[in-house]
Length: 403
Image (cartoon, rainbow, N blue to C red):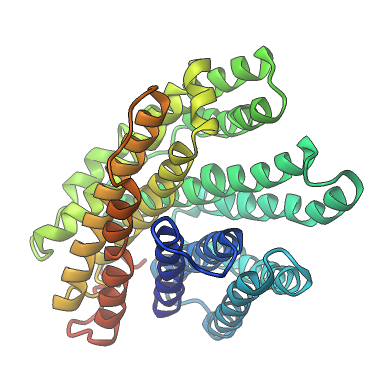
C-alpha cells in the first residue's frame, strides 16, 4: 500500500503540473508530462494497488509473500524510472525499455496471483478475479504491437490508434472493472452472506466488453455498423450490471460495521456511485450523437477516465480496505480522504460541465483553467496525508474478513 500510494502521489503531482500548464508556462513538452502521468497512474499505481489488495485481502497466508515483496519493489523502481524517462524524452528508447521491463515483471506477479488464487475458498464461485488478470495480460498484447505498427504504418494510421485504444479498453472495462466486481463478491461471501454469481450476467458482461470496443473503432473508422454494435454492447453491459449488482449491493449494505467512522461509508459510497455512473454514462453513448461527443470532446474523455479509475476502481476498493482495517483510519488518513474526495467530486463536476458547455455553441466555463488547477491541488495534498497516515497506524489490522 505504501508503494502504491507513493506512485499515486507522484502521478498526482504530474497531473497538477499538467493543470498548471493551462495557466502558466513551462519549458517541458505537455505530451511528455501527459505520457508520464498516464503511464505512472495506470501501469504503476493502478496495477500495484489492485495486486496489493489481492495479496493482502484474498490470500494473506500466501507462500509467495517474499516474491511479491521483491517483485513489487522492482516494479516501483521501474515505474519511477519510466516516469522520469517519459518526462525526459516522451516515447523513446529509454522509456520504452523501462515500460517493457515493467510488463515482464507484471507477468511474473500475475503468475503468482493465479497460482495463489487456486487455494482461495469459494474461488470457483468467483471467477471475476482470475478473469481480471486475464484481461490485464490480454490488454498488454497491443503494447507489443505498437512499435511495429508505428514503424510500418506510422502514427497517423487507424491501426496505431486502435492498438492504444484496445489496451485502454481492456484495462478500464476489463482488468479494473472485473477486479472491482470480484473484490465486492469476495467481501460479501467472506461475511457469510450467500451470493451466487449469475452465469447469464457473467457471460453477458464478457460479451459486452467486446462489443463496446466498437465505439473506439467508430472513432477511427466511422460506420453505422460500429455504432450499432456499440449500442448493443452498452445495453448488454447495463443488463449484466443489473443482474450482477442487484443481489450483491444489499449484501454490501448489510455488512455495515458500527466500528467504522461514518466518513468511510462516504468513501465507499462514492466508489459504488461512480461504478454505477460509469455504466449509466456508457449506456448513453448508445445514441450515436452522444457517442461522437464522447470521443471528440476531450474533457468528456478525461472526466470518464477519472470516473472509472479514481472513482469506481480506487475509491470502491479503498473503501473495502478501510472497512476491513487494512488501511488506517487515523486523523492523517481521515483528512487525506476528505481532501481527496472533495477534489474528485468537484473536479468531475467541472470536467463534465466544461465538456457540456463546449458541446453547446457560445457557452463557456469562466476561469476554467484556474479553477481546475486549484481544485487539483487537493489531490496530492490528500494522497500525501493518506501516505503519512500509513506510517502512523495506531490500530491493528482487522482480519475478520480474511479466509
